Length: 528
Image 1 (cartoon, rainbow, N blue to C red):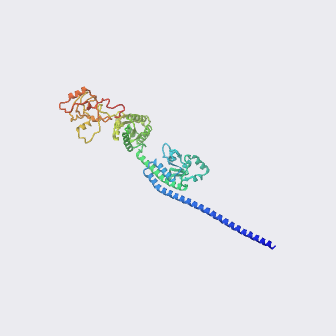
Image 2 (cartoon, one colour):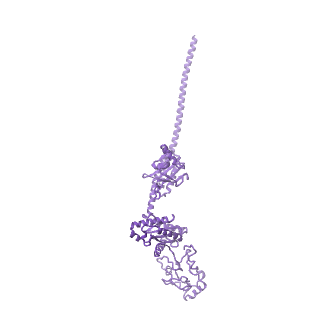
């Protein structure tokens, strides 16, 4: 019995010991699990801290790069970049800073009389990569995610788009061009007016940092676009005639000089057409200056509709207009000018029936470079001379300036040269004297100047040593030529007619560049 009790006590003790051991094991196990959990948490916290450190370093590098880039971008945008260059500069800055998968720069269109709602659209101006959206593609303000951000004038990210009401979210998604599904859209706003939009898809930077950076870029870009637009407007205003809306004389003078230099460098042709309104004073006196202004406005619009786009047309002063035809011969310009004249004569201007000719008409002159002038002033003067010939011929017509040469009905008169002391050179610049009849040779001493106010006969062959105004006959080749083809008999007669005291040697065949009078003007189409 006693042994039984002893065994029972031992069993109870063993059980108690086991219970104690189990409790301690459980406590140790719990503690171990707690330690393992703490270790895992610490490891996670350490990994998160490492990621944060990496992110902080990347953010610091991004911020440093952004701070370095932004002044350069601002300088490039305000350092005289053209209007077409600003979107490309902005795009390059966005790509460098945000490294997006896609990026689009769109600018707002300028208003136009022909399209009243043109300013309500954005036009794609630059893309990365090229071709993700078509350059020039239009985005109506308010349509799609890009147009919506421009309409509300707010920088929006993907979360902002997704938080819109379901009908709006679906509409914006359906209206957005599949070429660019933007994660960020920043409108460029200046004085509460949208001037453009920057949109990016898939930026490598976080949306928060990218959103702030894009907001700053949009502000800088807005200032650049607004400044360029105002500069372009001021430049256009300085070049445009306030009454008619076409180019003014200042611009025409500058442009004509440029086009003439270009034509001479490229060995091409250029023609000008200058015209004015016939009896314009009569029109003003009878109908008032307001009616005269309206006439000039309507006439300018009519001419614009009847000339090609590459033609430069402007108001040269008062009722006088100038048309520049680049790459056009005198004959081609004369045909174009005649079309303009006919269009004006056929148009029913107010009070045109009261004009002396029964219609509002114009008279004009056409001249070609370099035939009629190698500089702008000479060319315009030649066209002006043709205009006054048209006036004297009865008005309502267009005439081409016709230069004449030695051997024709009139001698070509070059411009006078001041300070020319050589009498023979002065004689070369004056009208040639009439010496001899057809085929008759007359000799003069080499140092004798022909009498003034005398003209050479059309078929006259000068004798040896004769000093005539041959220098005024300079065809396109630049070599003066005589207007006869002298035969042996003519040369013999010249020698026989020479006075005894003439010291000049007899002429040789190779001393003369001999052409016929018909050849002087050159082959057909020669502009000399």
